[in-house]
Image 1 (cartoon, helix red, strand yellow):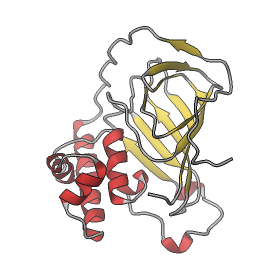
Image 2: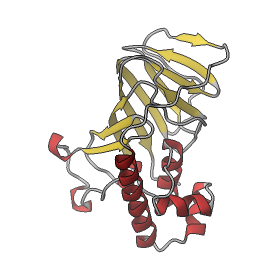
Image 3: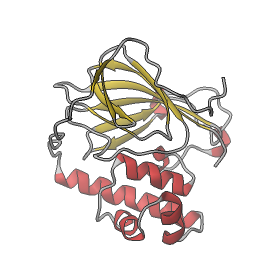
Length: 226
C-alpha cells in the first residue's frame, strides 16, 4: 500500500464511540513548576535558533515556510513564549527537522543505517505546559521518516486548542487510559485497545479528559518529498 495515498476515512481496531454533541471547554492543565517551564522554554528556544542559523535561514524564511509570524518565532527563540505541539510541528517543518530535534541535538548521521535503538539512547520530549511526554522508540532515519513514539498524556493534557495539519500519515493504539480525539472536527472517544489511522493533512488534535495518564503507541510516517 502506498503510505502517501490519502485515506478516505479513519480505520479503527475496535468499534468506537462517536459524540457529535458540543464539547465543553478543556480545563486548564495544572501548572508544574514555573521555573522548570521557564527553563524548558529557554532551552527549546535556543535549540530552534541554533537549527535556524545552522541552515542559514532568516526568521522570515522560516516563518513563511512554517506558516507562523516572525514575532512569534522570535519570542520562542528568546524563551519569552511557550510553543504548543501544533506550533512545534510547524517549526520542525519550517526547519526540515523532526520535532524531537527541537529538544536536543539529532542523532549522529553516521548512525543513519543502524537497525536498532537502545533504551538508554531514547529521546525523551517533555512538554510541561501541555502535559505530554514523547519518547522516540525507533532508530534514526533522516528520510524517509517512519517514527514510533511512546506518548504519555497526563489528565487534562492536550495537543492544543486548535487543530493542526502537516505532511505524512499517522496511526496508533491506546495502551492505557482514554483519549478524546478530533479529526476533521469530529470527536472520537478512544479507550484501551482502540486504534486510529489518518492522513496528517487532515486537521487533528487530542486531549485526555480522563482521570489517569493515557499511554499511546503513536506511529508517524513522512516521505522525503516536500
